[in-house]
Structure formats: structure tokens, C-alpha cells
Length: 260
Image 1 (cartoon, rainbow, N blue to C red):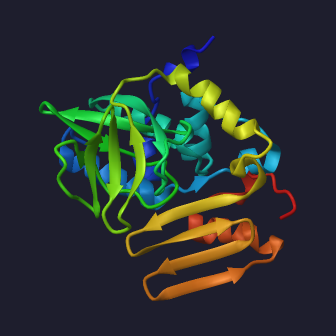
Image 2 (spheres, rainbow, N blue to C red):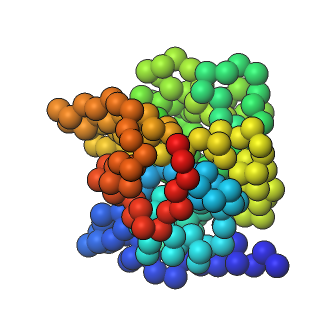
Image 3 (tube, rainbow, N blue to C red):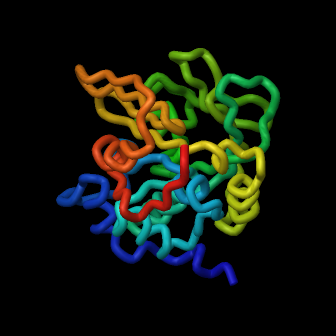
């Protein structure tokens, strides 16, 4: 019943083209891992357009995710983006597994599990990777040794490992370093998409990172900082399709819109 959650990625070259690395020869090393993470974050948006627009739980089958994100030029949320990223890493020879994470964003009490991340092992060392957080995350892999990179570090807190945002002085997310299976995300993915009070069901949320900034759209509130360009405004509903295309690299023709 759930075997399609474990299908191998069928075309790693098409995935690389989608993230702007069409001619890049991936090796199972840290340099390639950093490059793929950076490219994914700057080419594929975090978005909840299907859950918000159609009220559906995202389909986590690997072939479906490939068609949605790679062929149809869409984004997705954590369970979609990190699942496809994980399938790509497996396809090109990385040793890796997935974990369930808790989004903290400065909270001190443990939050319900609502996220997933990827752990990669290289030469006996573990690295935390995430392309589906939907906010400020490291631009590359994070070593479990606690070293600082990209304004973040990993640190131990009891049974948990925390991703600590050094610039904001708070914990972004935390996780137990325990491998989980793709089927473990099915109930979380469904619950978060169908809960009547879920912000991902009720509010349009889209964001992406740039090399020199970021952009976000929450309902009709649009913010963008890209080089010298700075925008903060409330947009008209009919502007949203063009904004999705220009700033988030999303094909709006595949999106069902509702009133915002």
C-alpha cells in the first residue's frame, strides 16, 4: 500500500536541472552536498498552495513529488521537499536517513512534531541537512561536531539535537537522531493539512531564499529583499500568479486559487 513512498528517483539529471545544476557532476561528498542544498533552497520555494487552495493533504509518493516539483515547476512543504531531496541523495550514492523534527523558532517548551529533516553520513561523520524548513536555515550541511556554519550550529540538549540560530540567539528546530521511515510522515502530513486551525490550511504561505536575500508571501502580504530590490506591500489577489512566477519560480497554471 505504501510502496510508492519508497520509489527511487527516476531522473536525477532532471532534478539537477530544476535546481540550476544542469551540468553539475555530483559526487557523494560534502562539496556536492553543500552545492545541492544551496541550489535547492534558491530555486524551489516552500509553499502550501495545494493545502491552502484545494484543502488536500500533499501526496508523498516519490513519482508524484517528482512530477509536481521537477516537471511542473512547483514547490512544496517540508514532507514533500525533504522527501524528494532524500530520494535524490539515495539515488546518487549518499548514505542518509530521515528524522522527525520539532519546529521551535525560539519556543522553550517542546512543540508537536511537524517537520522532517535529513541526516547524511560522510566518512563516518554525520551532517544535518534541510531544504524544506520554510524559513531561515543553513545554506549547506551542518556537522554534528557543533561547529558554526552559515550562522548556525548543532548542539545537544538531553535526548535532542538542536539547530541553534546564532544570529537570532534561539533554537530553530530540534530532533532526536533516530532514523524514521517514509510511512511515519503520512499521519503528520495529513493532520497538519487537515486540522481546521492549521495555519497551513487557512493561510497562503510561500517563501524562498536568494543568494542575496529572500521573499515571502503570507496571504496578500508580500515581502522581498533581493540585492538592491526591497518590496513590502499588500498585493491584489490578481497579482499573486505573476508574483509566484517572478519571485518564487512557481508555475501558477498548476495552482488552484481561492480568495485571499
